Amino acid sequence: MKKTVVCFVILLIFGHLLGIEVTEPKETNMDRLEWFKDAKLGIFIHWGIYSVNGIDESWSFYNNYIPYEDYMSQLSRFTAKKYKPHKWAKLIKNTGAQYAVLTAKHHDGVALWDTKLSNLNVIEKTPAQRDLVGPFCEALRDQDIKVGLYYSLIDWSDDRYPNFKISEKRYEDEPERWDEFVKFYQGQIEELSTQYNPDLYWFDGDWERTAEQWQAKELKEKLLQWNPNVIVNSRLQGYGDYATPEQGVPISKPESEAWELCLTMNDSWGYQPFDTNYKTPYQIIRIFIDCISKGGNLLLDIGPKADGTIPDEQVAILKELARWNKKHHEAVFESIEGISTKYTDYPTTLSKDRKTLYLFYPHLTLLDPIRIKGLVNSIENCSTVGPKGSLPCYKLGNNLFINSISSKLDPQVTVIKIQLDSEIELSDDFNYSYNCLSRDKAQNPPGSATMIGDYIDIISSEEKDDSMFKVIEVLVNRDFDYPSSSSPPEFTVKRWLFKHQEAFTNPQPGLPEGYFNGRTSLSENRDILYLYLQARPNGPLVLKGIKNKINRIRVVGTGVKLSWKVFNKLYWSDVPGIVYINLPLRASDSSCTVIAVQLDGEIELQE
Image (cartoon, rainbow, N blue to C red; front, top):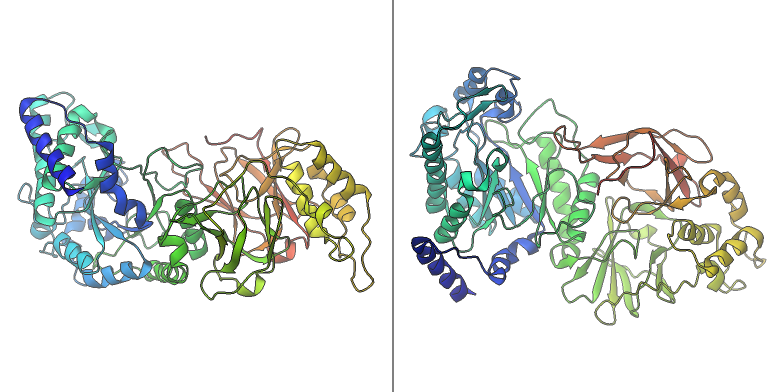
């Protein structure tokens, strides 16, 4: 690999001199990305003068929330007097994060290092009076953490840059002035590269100009000359190495070979003391699991105060994430992308040899066996990760059923380890031998929850065959004989069906995979979404990609109204936020809870 990279850099240099366009070989690009694809977790750090007043970074003056002069007055109070980068690095290391990214310069143009190309830096303009980037890089490397630097291509404070505020521009078309700015910004990146040699560049602001105007191609070539192993995020107008969606968890895996989701803990990137809308550790862990199950990373943001300390709320979240990651290390950091959610209701990862499947179970209790459909392999063992405990499981055809995990649950999300006899083999022929038809009625009669689970499988399926209708006939019209030593289920199938009959009147197929971890269906008019939950949730239910306005959420059969909250809806984007639905334990059904999400019209989904 080293020889390949060296040869490529030589080609870049001579190709540039001769005017020949040299394209990086795909295998070389993938070699550079290997560590990133294995990283799983990174920590984003938004730190700058905006932490003094606790306001939006840069956008506060650009959007005319406050005058530019008031924004820049924060320079005089940015002290960094309690900045301890080695303490930061240790906290980051404990989470399991493999890389961290610091905002070396945001759109406001304030540099956190001793740049020689501008006096707008913390050394000359703030009481901090020292380089803040160098100690950060050193502390990370002492902990064997990869170094990432955020750099904004745009600079709203520089007179050579055309844009100043949303309502004010410096100029429209002055090529010489623009060329001077390009030399300036690329000169600052050269400073960062030669002084700190980052492993990763996290660029931002590329939307204001084209690739040609930024000279993005030339910049990428220079970056690889300075460091042949450096990688770049997607915000370089087509010359990045990996995708970087923001805030919203992707419904499906991005097309890029590698990707990360950048995410705030509350609604702010930098420190804002009055933004108390923090996600819980459960919510953040669920989002993290969504990312790694799709082969991506989570870049989780923190916003230190102006003195360099990290807010207690953020430290607490990082510590709980660290506990959970340490307990489940093999399922997280030694894994690859999992299987499609058409095979199971829950997100998964696989061991690198593809012989172990890890399933992430986010609930408190299990009312119906966990199902994995289409699994051809034989099972060698099934257990929980962490304090190991074997779990009873059985197969019917190509379907695996896992029972009784209640005594081994993690307070956030439990991880189940399924060891296979060989590399995982999946079949789209689920070979349905429905639980309620296949079990020995005399020795092991199915409970109501088990039969209901089969019924939900049928109504949520897009394709229905004769065997499925046979199951419905059995469930609705046939009573089971239970041995005298056993009591009938508290709720019979018929009683449950009657209670929830609203959901079964000409039901339509539910959501495609990726929108909800579980089974769903739609009303005949497709304006009510039904969610089926055969468990007691450990936290709020998660619903993604719904563009509609939600009018009401209620429990079917009882009418209990449920509260919900939308996180990470960006005002500048049409991507929907994440809907979190709170289901109190006392509102749950003992066999299966059905939740109706009433929409303002026929359902519209984010593609």
